[in-house]
Length: 239
Image (cartoon, rainbow, N blue to C red):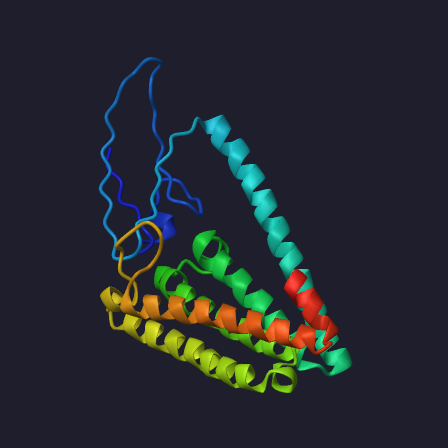
């Protein structure tokens, strides 16, 4: 038999309807068979074929789904709870944190865990391509905004806060640029496979560098705020 699987193909065309690409194999006891796989992608190679018995796969899949849905349930409760706090206390910090939770959850839900195409809409381009860039952009942007407000960076470390604002705008801009390049079919610029470590395209390299700089900047702001007596900074550092 021959099967064609991939993120660019509809899930309904898969031989087994599942969030991950699966193919059924029938082997007689003691039978030896050679399996050939051909993998082609313009993104980071992330394929790790495994062979399971039907019972082993069902058990592992049930456990994985239970843990994943528990995770998404907790994240949903946290996002709603913080949104309610934002309205009750009229504090934008809670709302930004809620956006961070939602964007991070949707990123995993739509791309890595593969649930979105299975339970929402089987649109490969929307979830696998735009999901990465838009999800990453919203997550990094909301993280920067939340950190600045929670640490009161403008009050205790104004220079770091100003620099952090430039980084936040950079995250948002890179999200737009990456999405535009993806729409134009220029994955070679946005996301190039050179190793199993991660994306190494020019835009992705710039994004990763700015994220590292942002982490250092937030850490510096947290220690400055802590030395100035800002109690939430202690919680932030411990977290």
